[in-house]
Amino acid sequence: MSTDRSLARCSFCGRHASEVKHLVAGPGAAYICDECLQLCNEILKDPAPFSPQALELASRPPVVVAAPQTMPTPDKESAPPAPQHKPHRVITLEVEQKQRGITLLLQQLCYYAQHFEIHYLWIRPPFPAGFAFVPRIIFSLHADTGAQWAGDRGGMIVARTDLGNDPEHTVYQGSARFRPLPEPEVKQLLVRAADPLGQFETPILPPWEFEVHIP
Image (cartoon, rainbow, N blue to C red; front, side, top):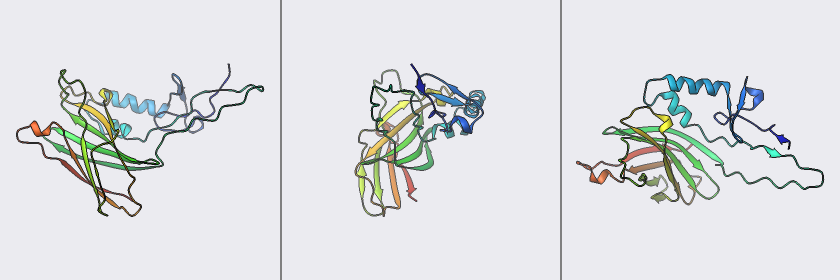
């Protein structure tokens, strides 16, 4: 069975084989170039728990890599390509705030066809083993036009143990989804984010507040 790997590119930076010295193939459609491999080696050697290189790598936009496709035979029609679910606009934020040893880093604002998302990193002490799930950050958004969005709709959060080596803290990567899309005239968002467990702290943990400018 022959496969077409002409569309292969690095899963970390998105560059094609012609743009790098070496491109190492992994399982399925996964690839990594020599420069990103070197960056990963430097992150592994860095004693800092959350090095700037590690956070920069985690903040990169997702790379959609074409999987190897079976070459069609003359007597078969090729199937239409599956639609790619990727944002049509990505705004890099890279703003963070710290409270009592807990850091919230807003990474990106991603616009999709019918909704938009905030992607973030939540760096905090690990949750005890008794937690059956990781609580999500609760968001409240206010635009300079008066529009508002509350809560997260369909977001997700996962533990990213690969992004840190500090046993006192764990990195959680999450996203929050909002509908409808902001109007084109929206140029600034006030983002308020609350730790769902903060109300049980003494004293109560106040919400984070960010001013996000939309170019």
